Image (cartoon, rainbow, N blue to C red; front, side, top):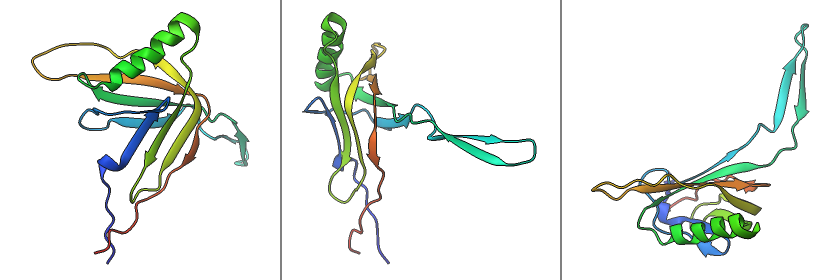
Length: 146
C-alpha cells in the first residue's frame, strides 16, 4: 500500500522574489477565490443554466510570527504602494518535493495591514494580499515509497 507524505517545510511562499520565512503555527498560508467560477440559475421549470463569471481573482492570507523578517519585506511593499503606487509584485505558493500544487499571481499587492498586538507570548501578523488573477494547479502528493 502506498503512503503519501506532506511536509509543511516543502511549501514555499515567494512574494516579489523573496522567499517568506517565520510562519506561524497552524494554517500559515491560504488562497481563496473571490468569486465562484460559475453562477447557477434554476428556472421555475427546473431547467439549470450557468453563467461564467470570468473572475480569477483571489486573496492570500499569510500568517507570520511577529519575529519573522518577512514582515519587513511585506511592510516594504505596503509602504511602496502607499507612497508611490509601487507595491505590486508577483506571488507564488508552491509545493516542492513530493507535492504538486502551484498557485501563481503575476500581480498582487498588500490589501490590508496586519493587526498588531503584544503579549508575553510571540504573536502573529496576518497579512491580507490581493491576487489579480490566479493561475493554479491543485495537486496531491507523491508516494513516499513504503
